[in-house]
Image (cartoon, rainbow, N blue to C red; front, side, top):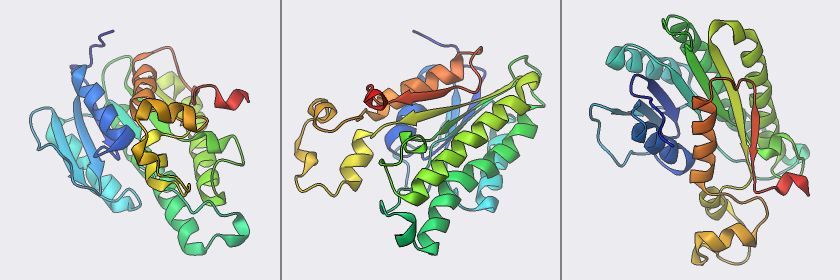
Length: 247
């Protein structure tokens, strides 16, 4: 299916790899101009439809600066995808240091809030009926206690709550906000796994069967595209986990 995003400007965080990179590709495929924010280096240079930005989502100043650079470059913002995130050490609250807690909250919750706080007033200035859409990338850890550590679970649950409130408050202003809740994403789980066997030697299609809830980055990106383009959908919390939550 082809969606017409030719008049839209998007900002995607964590766009240099994983889910974010797939989101950037999909949005550009459908005609959007996309700014990608990441601390990592981007693989592609800037062009008429792509603006790579290096910034820390944990920094309020960096977040505000990224939004302003998009406005200077393209004059508007229609789509915000809060994808950037950092994992914790899978520890319970008694074994979570203040330093780790603050890092995970800053990146996974405060950063999206900073960006939303800067972007929403700009979306409100858009003249179209559908002024803007925000998609936050949370996790099934917001719903289940055994998926991650205390810091990550708390941050993602907070992000989901932030999305619900935003969807309600701005529902009459043409601004929508929804959340995706992936299970394990293949690329990130492989990178962060402490399993005794090395899943890097397992083809991606087999990885879907070797661990429950595993999905590809593209699976999640397609869910995000749906939430962006389905104008009647607001406040949705879309679980993408191959049915793992049904267990």
